[in-house]
Image (cartoon, rainbow, N blue to C red; front, side, top):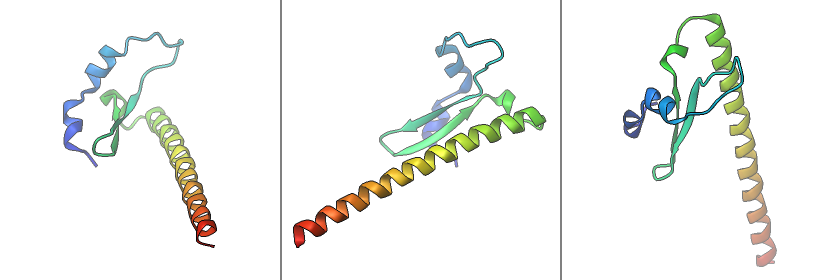
Length: 94
């Protein structure tokens, strides 16, 4: 899904602004961004990394796995927080 605000973000501009030195063999593939006001997120990927090369596929699968793992951890933390609120609410009502 692409949000309207993403059109204002270009990978090349991000790469120019992020002037960091990375270890040899490590490259910036993309950057995860969040629009706090609309509670939306996106991954801006270097267009050179979107292709059919097996290495690109493998790297992006690794990124997907990390995002999925963090999503699951966030979801679990949210559930735990909600359960705690419900338990406290029951105690107050008793």
